[in-house]
Image (cartoon, rainbow, N blue to C red; front, side, top):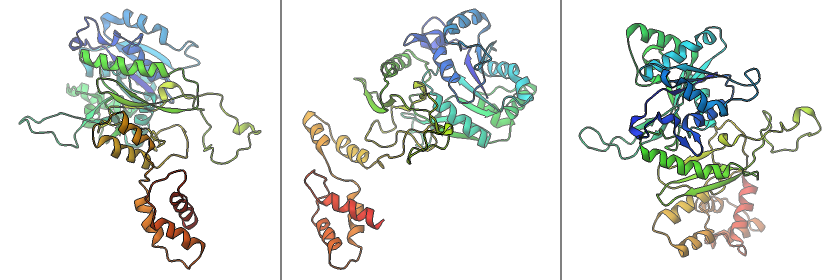
Length: 407
């Protein structure tokens, strides 16, 4: 598959005096971050960077340190092509550059990404590419806040903000842009042209506001803060952990950090494996830091890490299998979000042991008809249980035992 990274815009609104994709973020240009994540996409064999014709040499120099060092035969090919006078024109220039690969069947999906979105993770690239293969086209979408309609009423809650990377089946995409060229049509983004001419659906893949596009100076400041915190975690070589991030401006997020082994397909690690067989050997690799889950600015403004799964079932890599179902995270939300917190109330929340599952589980266990005896004694313990789980208590143990026995 091919990734196109657009970097030919001017970026006047950010106020930097240069093309914004060349502005540095945590020590490297915005465009270099986008290139790095594109190169980490699963199955990518070609990345096309689109630059303004007058900035060709400058962009090539800025990206030279971030290109694959082993040569094109051992890694993805990276090409630099001149862009057009509009976004659509730059997309069309990139597609013409890969048309031969598409027509020869060497490229099945093309993903197009804004070079000024430096925080799009390889996992997001993988998700939109997989969805495009299934449906035809796919794009990331995130909840929006503070939007109003033309008459100043709140925008519908179902309205989402569309982002990049956007991915599409390669041949229908190429034909769509050829048809647009004949008609003189220019879409506002890739999906607009694909939807108009390809006759295939474009589906949404869940994303977050963390995948921001640097448009205004404050966007760069937010990206710098988030990126600096994440960069500090990138060298952690420990078993994977969730790290909750927060700053004084109200930005919150969760980053998975550490060394996560890349396991061979089908190895779920829940049972002993014949490790002496070659097919079961570890690959020797760990997930690239950019592929580890990262979320920030959740829709409700609350970031919680309490041993629940940090990703959904569509995450392409194996992180683990024994996650908390989310009950502890739900309880923490109830405790912390309900009212302002101080050190004392946060200490109480840390010591809290009320089981959010117990109000549902206990009535079901008590409803089981039993003869007198050992199990009946366990039920009687549940009748007086206050639903907390102290170390010296027996109610939680009785509930766990009965649930496991009768399940």
